[in-house]
Length: 303
Ligand SMILES: [Fe+2]
Ligand SMILES: [Fe+2]
Image (tube, rainbow, N blue to C red):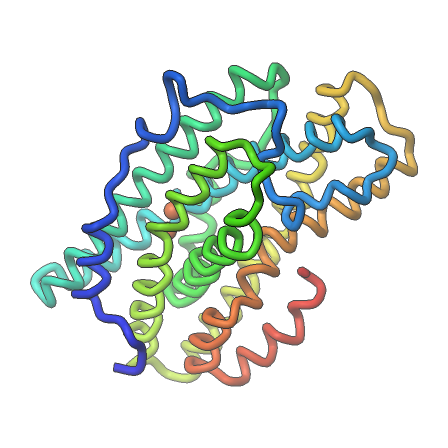
């Protein structure tokens, strides 16, 4: 075994973490719209000087809403992917089987958690915010790629969540308490997922040909392009939601600056912060040193 963790240990860790969706949202646990939802390193609103500070906070909250929605989307394909992996060897290693089913159960809970937060957001924000989708169509498109491509994208996403929390959310005292609590509880379970994905990538690549590995990496790159198209569209939706929320239309040059800066902020949030994560690169490099070099060369465009 080339990694420090095992299915048995990951299952034991997952079983020690117990929280319910109802513990995090609903009743007296509501969102505080006087606070930002996302850390500045992800929202990147500070340089948009054509917006007033309250308008920048409104944009931050719109980006927070999109974060809930985009995680809802990606978990819609991670869930069937993990169930498929668990089905492959139902009568094999019991720790592997139970760890993967626990993983799937947690992703189903996260989908529910993100949806409940979106409902709370819709009740409090007052303006409808459009989001990319629908989740089922996006999941079908993602799952049409080779299994290794989906596994690499999943690995990227799970390490990305670790980075978001550890590098920018944890120490940020300005964030809304409920939203921060969501990010904390998601992060706690995602660490086990990232490590399980690592073991899955290792198993998937143990006995496949180099051309299958190449096809898997090419599929991962194609999925990154697909995600980027979605992020461009989400940026336009966020602009429309912002103009509605602040009851004014930005002029052409402000719109242009908004789209450029916010598309790049979205790229960093969902693509760059995953593809440059040292743990993701470590696993990719073990699968294909050449693939790792390709991703490292492409990454500055997504940071
Ligand atoms: Fe999750
Ligand atoms: Fe996960």
